[in-house]
Amino acid sequence: MGTRRNPRIELKVPVRIFGTDAHGKIFSESVSTVDVSQDGAQLAGVQAELKNDEIIGLTYAQKKVHFRVKWIGKPGTPMANRVGLLNLTPEKPLWEMVLPKPAQDQYKWQSGDRRKFPRIRVVLSVELQPEGGAPIWANSADLSEGGCFVEMAIPLKQGQKLKVGLWIDGAKMWVHGEVVSSTPGFGIGIKFLDLSESDKTALKNFLQKHKR
Image (cartoon, rainbow, N blue to C red):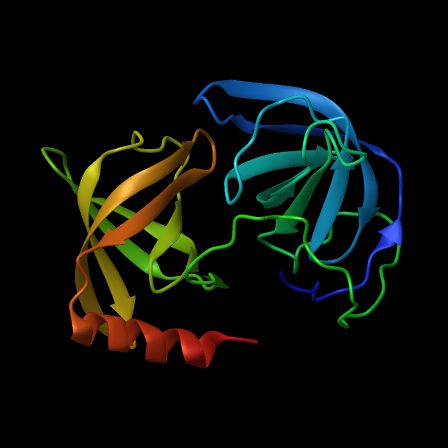
């Protein structure tokens, strides 16, 4: 369980969400917000079957933003068809109204699925070397001790094994990884495999410096 970084205000406006559902199928549907903040939003009327920590797109008033699914309402409860989202780029204005300044309120996420390693929003240069493929250069959107999300318009397939080069404090760290999520138009979630103790320490120290 955790608490929000920013308080939310009630707001009901139509938005469109799109991405890849829990079965790997592309979806796009119109839903509405319940409340919003600088860091996230709660949606109602979601029919697509989503997964926690998946990246989806949301459009509102001609603006498109990447969100991470943080919790999903359980079927058969008052929270059915509701989804909680975390904005991956809160520094970019999305909503038309003035939102409360950053603070911490007492709301607790309704998710039973929490990451082993929390991810930190940090942009890094990344080199990907897929097995049997050509090198790819891109940027990360977030990073943790266990993996990262890499922005790619045409993503690699889920299950793809690869080597990942991360520029950590001016030096390139190479780790083995596997694509665990793939969203067209957004990118891929990568899980790190078999990290050495020295790599774990370097990542942990780097992330500590980038936490809010």
